Length: 472
Ligand SMILES: O=C(O)CCCC[C@@H]1SC[C@@H]2NC(=O)N[C@@H]21
Image (tube, rainbow, N blue to C red; front, side, top):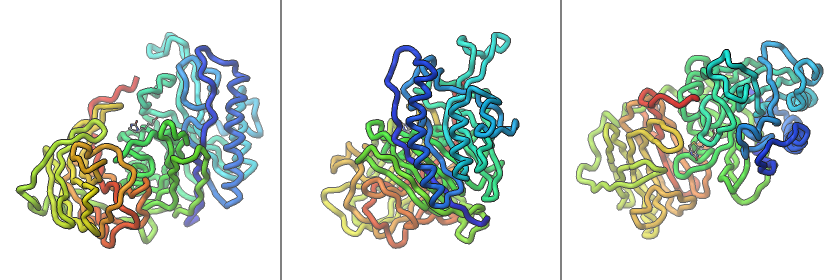
């Protein structure tokens, strides 16, 4: 197949009551069945619209309100897919496996690949020095059932987010892929997207066409909103990317999408209701063969070839999500500006429709190690709207704007080749097809965007500079 139809479902998880002690496995299954009832409706609707594959979110079947012992009744022993198992037709083979059986039947009965996130448990004993004292490993796990209900992939999340003390990390990152008639797929989970392994390796070594990405993503403006960062990763890595987020507005969890290398095909962001939402869109099976496939990018080519645009600009300091940026204010309606920090210089050429008195924009640079909620090295060039006209508010989250840019071009002297291009518009919306990346590393818009701009950002990850990660 040259193309296929993808679906992602943003699910509003029915959470269990928070209990001090573990519930019975029957109670756990009752709660999980309530969530699977909702997922089943989405799977049927997706299949009716011709979808070949549907991705459901991380933690969508039991939530995230657990400690190590209270999640235990929700876990199943998930076998290696090499055993060739269709839980729907052979449920006793690796029983008890009620959740795997039901997911497998949903895939089989609707002839659709189903991607889900559940918990795996693996017994261990004292002969293994790393074996936890309760006698088993517990993994945050993605499973994939093919359209006949066969288990074809199992992935254990490697980069656990800080609060996930209920789970263990596998000893090594797992590179999990599978082939279909509509391309080669790879899979990872949520916080994994910030790190080199297994995420980057799946693309650069395994050459997957599409990444499957269950997530429970807490949005952080201005640079780490789900739709913004995930679509940017798809563009920067030149892959299709299917992101299914859980929906919980009190946790700022919303933002799912179907992203192609040249831009989003569909996305969803909704902080107004607690409803779930199904997205369905067509993608090319082998995006690197498609005529719109972007050329390879040298991210520093343009920026290193030009001189500092504005040598006498006044710089000031500001903080974005705990990182100390160097900023310079865009005081004129149009112009060329440069701001530098350490080895990173960021150049911006821009033209606003009008310079409003009630809104302030800055150009910012950050070259350093981010150290809060995980340690990862960043190089960031960003144009962004300040929260108010007080320059002290530059970098704080802001979700609406009124200033339109008729054109912009942003570039930076990056030391890394992993740069993710973000454009986020007023109301936390994506700028589908309204900007492009040139092969010399400029992120440009020639005719401006359909809505006012919150931020235009080149988000660089310099993996070689990361400290050792705490994979406990
Ligand atoms: O549970 C996960 O693995 C996903 C967490 C992703 C959170 C993103 S990444 C860093 C940033 N910090 C947050 O609180 N939200 C974002």
